[in-house]
Amino acid sequence: MIKRFIVSLIRRGTKGLIKLGIKATPDITLAVFGSVLVALILVFAGTRILFSETEIISPVNLGPVATPTPNILLANIQKDSTIERKYPPNEYFPESLTPKYGGQLSDVGAVAYGVMNRETGELLLAKNLEKRLPIASLTKVMTAVIALENAPLDLELSVSSAAAKVGEASMGLSYKEKLSLEELLYGILLPSGNDAAETVANGLGAGRIWFLRKMNEKAQNLGMYDTYYFNPTGLDEDSQDTTTFSSVLDLLGLTNYALGNKKFADLVATRYKEIPYKEGKHKAFYLENILKLDSSYPGIKGVKPGLSDYAGETLISYLDNHEKLIAVVLGSQETKADVVKLYDFILKNKSNKTN
Image (tube, rainbow, N blue to C red; front, top):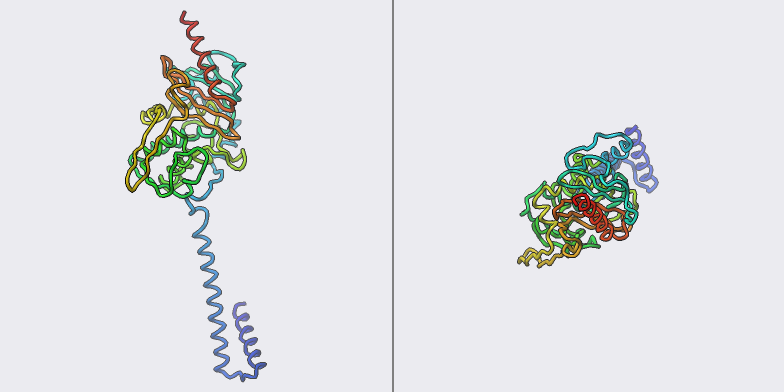
């Protein structure tokens, strides 16, 4: 077929020369054949180069600038949502799904909440414990866990242009600044810096997709079966279906696990952190914990608030004041008021039983 095609081209070229008054001598015919052959080589070579370039720029190799789509882990979460699972999956979750203090509190307006005693493992109060909901910046608890478990605190990371421009809650990073992982963790957990979270996700391991895979694998390994992370910040995506979600139960287990890491516990209990200027590296940063720990509730030692259009107000709170209580509040209009009611109810009941 190719032979016929080449012969046809030579004949057409020769006829064209005759029409122009040029005699088709053997030398002329050979010249036409040579021109056709060179043209075909260039066409085939160009096609090969085109396909080679397509392979080089495929999404698999785009690394940190690619936006991940739901993978096999999310498919498994959706497929297994109705399957009865062994409970508890490990020692970090409440020992039972039946709350100690019975029914829901009518004056707590959140869509879902739960409180557990960290020392005894008791579930004290609960509403919609396993309901999947957007969680906003509570996502950053897992972001910090993955960072702490996969890199040294003194690792230096550079701020990309995309990370510096991510927007909303910010540490105040600028393009090309260089900070240690520890400094960035303060930026993630105190002012809830999306720029710091993206810098860490892009800078560790093989980049952002690798980091998100680690987040979701960790969730599965911990038994967080109603959780999926679409980004390291908790920012809303284009739709609620592609926005990070979790449940009160999963977040109770995750927080209990995370607080077992002393560095994480110290970070979330920090009220204020000043990071001094480093010549050639970065400007000075003055970071306040947006939880306002001093004024929220006596004995609060963290952990993380969140806010987005899809999630509303969200909160993970840790009370360490005679009792070690973890509270999670999702889908609230006023998390501070809701968590105060939860703590007050539990401590009042405990006091009444003691007296």
